[in-house]
Image (cartoon, one colour):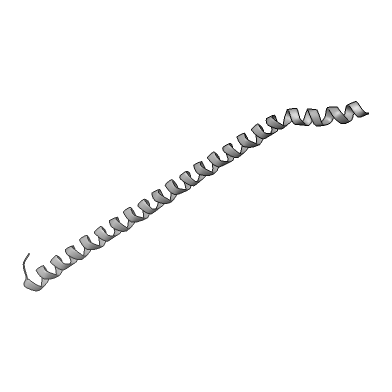
Length: 82
């Protein structure tokens, strides 16, 4: 019985560095996964903002072009130029 009481603590002391290495490895992997997820989220947000900006730019150009054509058509109608 005394041998068992002595073997268990020795066994745990021997396995302690292995357990510590496993926890450290898991923590490092978790940190890398969080960084990767954050990076991907940032890239997705950037891409979404660029898409919205490009759409707004295209809409603005379309409105400006339509307004310009309407202005010239009205000017021609008023002045009688054709």
